[in-house]
Length: 121
Image (tube, rainbow, N blue to C red):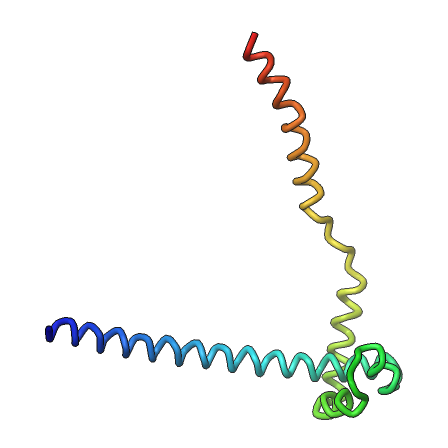
């Protein structure tokens, strides 16, 4: 009985540690996402010449909310985000492998019945 109780305590302690670690990881991810959202808001406002009403309408949020999110971001950081977006826009789009895989997958299936017939003879 004591062995079961000791094992239960170990599992409970392990569970607490895992849950706390998951909470820390989630909090960090949330913080990173909030920073990215603020930076994106600042960048989009700069790209639209600070027309918060237009951007808010396009995004379906209030202009006040958009401006509140963008406010803590420095102009220099907003420019960095915009430069990153421009660099990304200039790169050629990657060719999707799904199309290549799809074509390759259809070719063998079309020849598969023929090979089956040849084996039957």
